[in-house]
Length: 157
Image 1 (cartoon, helix red, strand yellow):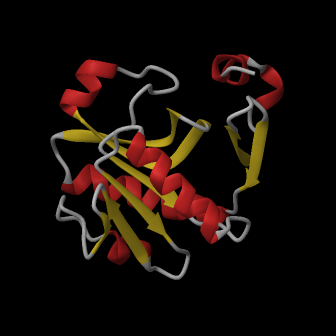
Image 2 (cartoon, rainbow, N blue to C red):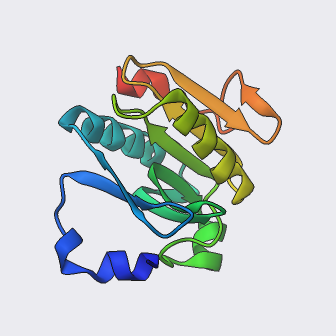
Image 3 (cartoon, rainbow, N blue to C red):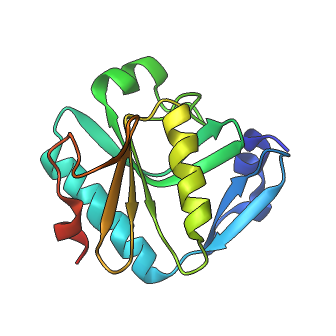
């Protein structure tokens, strides 16, 4: 299955969970809680307030080497938007991709998503845990903080 088929299929509208495609084109679904949605909103609002030279997107689809992954929140610079517009899915990851961890996600899954987004061109990938801890990753590995000067942990507590 291709991502366009998922997006255009009326059966997948208004589902209470996130859909992604694995490397075989099969649908993977993860239930999302209201707390998960709250964290997405708070991170998105923080991006909009702090990073003026771009915009935040929620549920941002990115083509990776293992299928289409959907970042809970992404930040795209104006240059990124100018180059890619709102293609669906993005063929290159935006500068920042954020995953909000739900109880159904494993640490292995999150580690894999970090690598996939970085391979797809993200400069940073953030993993936001429901307890307020945020792990930041860049091309060189785990970071002490974001190079973008945004402290998302404050926004999600």
